[in-house]
Image 1 (cartoon, one colour):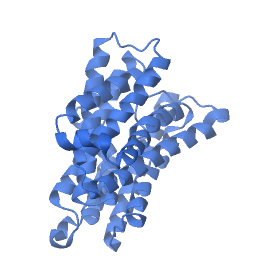
Image 2 (image 1 turned 180 degrees about the horizontal axis):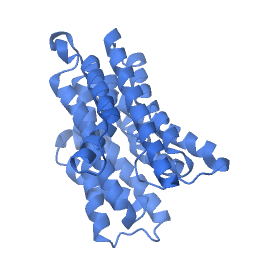
Image 3 (image 1 turned 120 degrees about the vertical axis):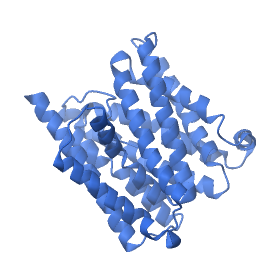
Length: 313
């Protein structure tokens, strides 16, 4: 759940801090990748995907509120536009977490994480539709390559032998689409307040939505179950520390570097699924995964390079 064009902070070149900042972004991507694997373990144990998503976001909210308390000045919470666009971002992150875990439940961690990684493609499509960005043959070619990768990864051409259900495929793509909504919400909220305030409102909206979608009995039983430490780790890694690492790290990390670093998340999640959960991938599925990861990363690097050139001009 990481994309270089997220307008959390403005990139400021700083050779002295670049190494530490990049390491923080890598750590954030690693945490998100592990969160997918931990969520898969909980779902395999019978926990409702929506309950798993709820606790991931709720624990993240606690961390963000603490961070906001430490940086209360100039938060922008008095601005109505911040509240509106932050709420949009909250709807996006609620959909992202929920559909991601639903996709895992209906398929595998590797497929769900890779499909979610297609989020930049959805951002481009929405930008084309809203005329926020011009289309080009290169961008359309990249989108086509990603679609080919999705077909190979999910094996939609041979559903009878695929371990991924149509619901799993749809949920994975909706997770990416929801993350695109989060990106747009954050982008339009950013000029009106601090990242801490935006995240606080977004996660509060997230909790208000997810608390009604999960199994009520499971929601309350988490606090007394032996599995609660795993829920805690999921929340701390998947939404608590990871977002803080990402926002702080992006201050001095070049967008092109962040684009490459983004591959850490789906790769980590996929390795977790293969090594820990013993999930298997066929040869064509691996080709499809590679096609998606390489194409989306190249498209993101190209986009960041074009923005940097335009800014430099």
